[in-house]
Length: 202
Image 1 (cartoon, helix red, strand yellow):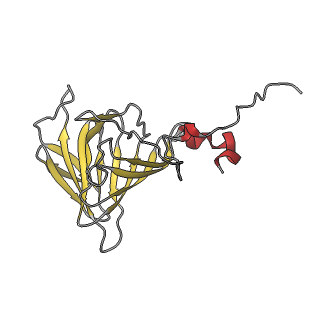
Image 2 (cartoon, rainbow, N blue to C red; image 1 turned 90 degrees about the vertical axis):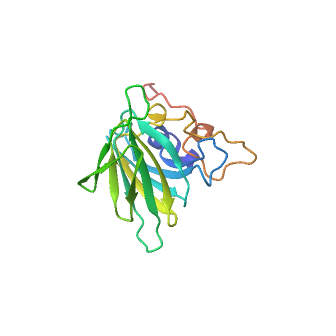
Image 3 (tube, helix red, strand yellow; image 1 turned 45 degrees about the vertical axis):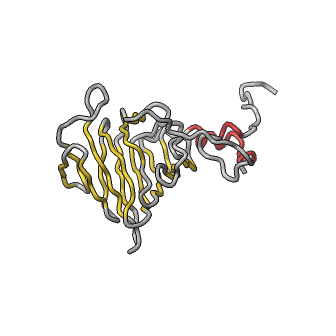
């Protein structure tokens, strides 16, 4: 289907829509990892927003990081009695990228909440939190797996992520068989025809 679509699907490729499965190169996906699917992302389609769905397994940690420019809403989309809760830990950042010792103020579903440095905010199914740029956050699920939504400004994984402990955003994959589904970082594998020059005269 990719090859049949050809260049018509460039918007998908350039915006990195689709599957994103990472262990942050930890080698321990069950305890340090995340599964994402990017539904929308600005860029070629002149969108100023992005949307993702994320599956956070029970006790699976996304490492402490912040974003230079992106503002994001993290929403616990779980809608069943067995859906997990999301625990979000927060730190303000210093000018040098360290962890500040100041209290944190965030908005959760329109209500301002406060936390000590490194404090925890619990998001039950249906609850959300708004994370502004330069606010360090790490999260994991408790009481079961959690289905999480992210609605944000344009997402740029190439240079907008800052991990407190330096690590790659995408894992190094040892290929031992052809992929069944391409990850959003693997679209360059597609052997697409060259772009036609529409300016040529017949």
